[in-house]
Structure formats: structure tokens, C-alpha cells
Image (tube, rainbow, N blue to C red; front, side, top):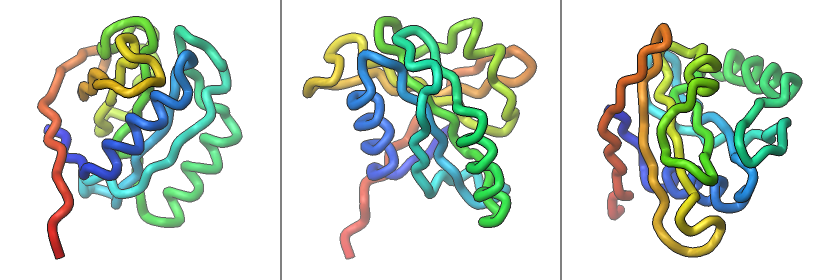
Length: 143
């Protein structure tokens, strides 16, 4: 199960809507071994495409160096689909190189970048095998 706080969930959805009709992509980093996303890192879709995403190699290298300095790892790798359901494509499965990460897909196909709900789903992708998992969005606690 992916447990994500409301602020990170909202940030991912906002990024997906902002970049529509192009696919958005990014990472939610968290402390190594924690399985807890704590930091939102929106990335540039170097492909600038409505049908696929590609991390910019220089930006990705800088992110991994930064995560290494912070003792973090990519807990969530996310991207959006703008015209199809939130389910990994063959290309997405082939690009999945983080066996411990949650792969989140956000579909903006219904409302684009306007108000309205999105489809938000999470998957584990290991050795080409896709397994959907439950997503639990935690609301902020009152102080």
C-alpha cells in the first residue's frame, strides 16, 4: 500500500493538471528504507509529449546526487497520462527501474487542466510484472 499525505497528493495532481496536455513526471523522495514519501520533486518532461515522458538526464543525475546527500531514495516515481487511463503502458513498464518504488499514474483525460477529479493509481513494477496497490491519502492532523 502507498501511504501519502494530502499535501504531496495535491502537489502531484496539480503538476499533472498544470502540464496537461503534455505528460508530467517527477519523484517523491523519502528517507532511505522508510517507504514514506516526504519531498515533492517535480521534473521536466524532456520529451514534451502528450503520449510519453522522459526525465531529463542531467536533472535526473542531479536529483540522485541530492537524494544521496540527504540519505533519501525515490519512494514514488510518478507521471501522468493525458488521454488514457492511469495504468502503466508497455513503455512505462520497460522504464521502471526502481524495484522498491511505487509507480503512480495520474490520468487527466477527463478534465484536463480544469477543475475536476483525476484518476490516481499506484503500482509496483518488478521485473516487468505490474501489481496495483491501494492508495491511502492521509489528511493533515490538527495541531
